Length: 116
Image (tube, rainbow, N blue to C red):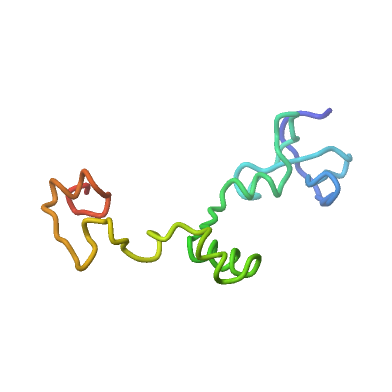
C-alpha cells in the first residue's frame, strides 16, 4: 500500500467508493480536492466521508406523512406524538399563549432570549 501525497489523474471506483490513482491505489482528499493523499486503512470511502458533513432534518411532519402513507390517516394519528402538533389539554399552555419570565422559561425551554 502506497503512503503519502498523491499527484496525478484520478478515477472513481463505485464498488469500493474510493477515488483511484493511476497506480491503482485508493486516494482521499482532506481539503475538498486541493490535494490528495493515499488512503489508509482507517479512511472511509468518498461518499461516507461526504455524508458525515451533511445534516438531515427528519421533522415530525415528515414522520406523520410517512405513517399516513404506511398505515392511513387514522392509525397514523394514533402512532404519532400528539403534542408535536397541538397543545394538549394537560399542558399549562392549553387555551392560550403563556408568557413566562425569561428566568422561568429558560428552565422550561431553550426558546428564550435568556439562553443567549
